[in-house]
Image (cartoon, rainbow, N blue to C red; front, side, top):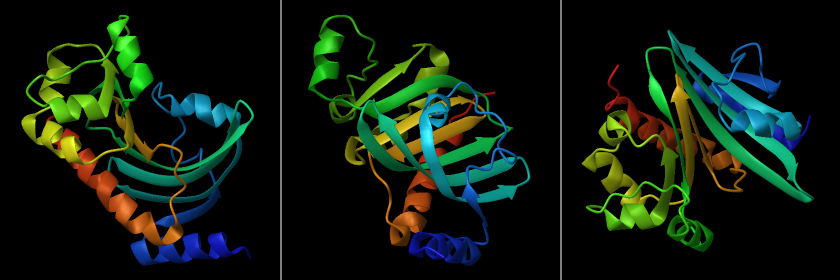
Length: 193
């Protein structure tokens, strides 16, 4: 048995989660129009998934390996599904120079003038309506003013989180899960059904 397989199996046991050797489509049979759907269509190797379900809430951590053009990419994603949530479709990613140029040319980026650090750290795409602005409370904007590098997509019942181009070391999966759960809790506390 490979080292990472043993590490993930042990981690699942420690956390009380279930280990799957690849993406468990039977436990999360659909993804609500998330960009991860596009990624999963390109995946060469999805492996080492751990899964937990509590009532209507499901959590999944999954390693993905795929090609972006000709460049190999490996990353670890966290997916949270809660049937009691009703989220707008929002995509959040670290902002870079090309995004700033694009915003100048009219590409969508929702900024918050009262949190310039947050606005310079992240690019937000989504319908700029009341629901979006209710999700981005001062607590959320303050947190992401300092917590950098997350890519977050949410829609309906699901929130997907990962760090750009990061395959998380197995010893860091537990802290990764805790950070992801904190982010989910920040958004879940703001959900207006």
